[in-house]
Length: 261
Image (cartoon, rainbow, N blue to C red; front, top):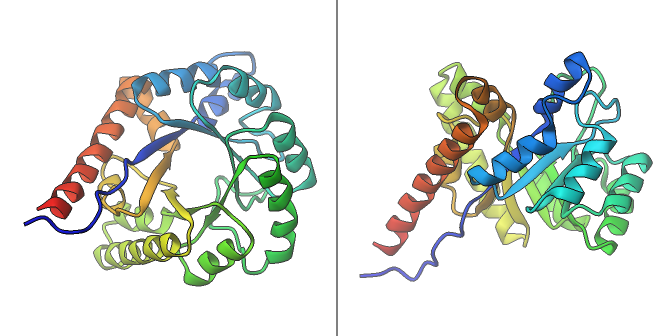
């Protein structure tokens, strides 16, 4: 007998190409080209491309964003801090989406979610003109009810749930913490969807950790970068993206089967 539950949505893969630019910038010059990497990722099954234009321009550059917007055949997700400079850049290039993230100069990578509760008024001022320009707004947040509620209140279209704590616990084989963090993510995904927010997730996901997150039916997009670029060194970017795409599809097919059983 079929259940009345609807089939889980297709799970999109967004590939972050920041660290192709990191390698390029280590020596200067033009190689490797992040735009070429983005095109290869799309050929391999990526549904979109993410690029983080940081204040210090440590990897992606302004020229990269202009070229990505001009040449990509898939949506561009511009990660950015909530600053006047980045707002101007977003309104100039008009990517498909802007994901607002916390940013500190001394960090190696984004270390946690945006504090939407504390930044309510400031974020509202940035979100309004972005949405008025027809750009979707995503907020990168920790999987906490207060942050989800605040994200809906400030007018976000999307939340991207920070999966870093789960992935870090998995690396160190901390099983109890893994279970706790997966429950937090699942509960946050359900709460976010109930609040009318589209649910994405990302940060630190690997071939070994993507399955349980991909199996959360409310999540419709995963954004993965550093790991895929690292794997590309050994087997090529096309291979790493295709394998991640296959693992995501397998996890989503399994929950689709359980719904229709």
